Amino acid sequence: MTIILRTIAELRAWRDQVPPDQKVALVPTMGALHAGHMSLMGLARDRAEVSIASIFVNPLQFGPSEDLSKYPRPVEADIALLEGAGIDAVFLPPVAELYPEDASTFVVEESVSLPLCGAVRPGHFRGVATVVLKLFNIVTPDIAVFGQKDAQQCVVIERMVRDLNLRIDIVRGPIVREPDGLALSSRNIYLDAADRRAAPAIFASLEAARLAFEAGERNAETLAGIGRAVLAAEPWLKLQYWEVRHPESLAAIETIGPAGALFAVAAHLGTTRLIDNYLARPAE
Ligand code: PAF
Image 1 (cartoon, rainbow, N blue to C red):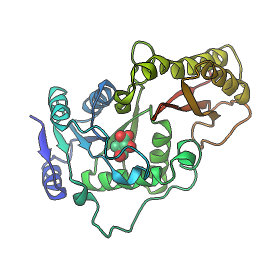
Image 2 (image 1 turned 90 degrees about the vertical axis):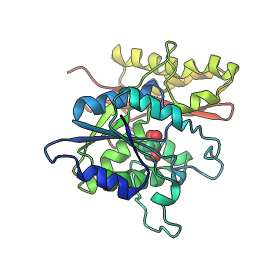
Image 3 (image 1 turned 30 degrees about the vertical axis):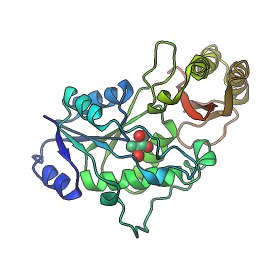
Image 4 (image 1 turned 90 degrees about the horizontal axis):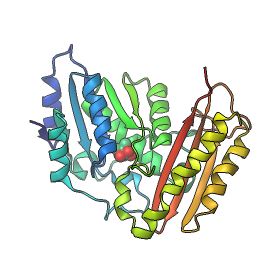
């Protein structure tokens, strides 16, 4: 039975009952759960005795022209999925529970949140870091699980955990894909038939660059050029960025060194914005 907790007080009462020798794993989500999320739930269950998911469509991380009001909210179906996955509790707070009207304290990361999505979604990572720190403070998990699909989000959260000395292990769950390579995302439901036909080009562009990397190419611009060329052949898709970056600092690099690199893509299909990535690691 998945326990439904709607207030911070309920959550804390539940948390206080967990024996101190049992680890708690948190999977923060915005709901509209799919197989990608469910793989994160599996990791939470494997890594800790007690598992909790949060479902909260966080207004603070949406820009004024973004999809906050139309973001899917299939709460009953989500709860059924969490039940089926054996998740112990779900935190489902209303907006007013997390944000007092005069809330005036926010978490701003000032380096790894700036490029890539940060450059085109101002305020987005401030919203993410703020809500994630609040969830961490409320749940006090030992482990928190995030999807590698949002690679920059993982980097921002890992940086926050390091910089603010949080005692939480961050686990990244691998990207889950459709058979044609499209990364699972709650936003895929917005794609119409023509968008959906074009969408796998994003993964194809990452694959082309991965193959070149595995064949020994280490020049960042050459690899990004290979990826961009694949997407240029799909005019339905409007590229926002295709970048090869340092995997931890997200700084631009000339050559891929021992740390490897993050290949990161964002593109629009109609009004839907999709992101995807590949973490390139040089062979040991
Ligand atoms: O990845 C998401 O769904 C959200 O950004 C998160 C981490 C739940 C914060 O709202």
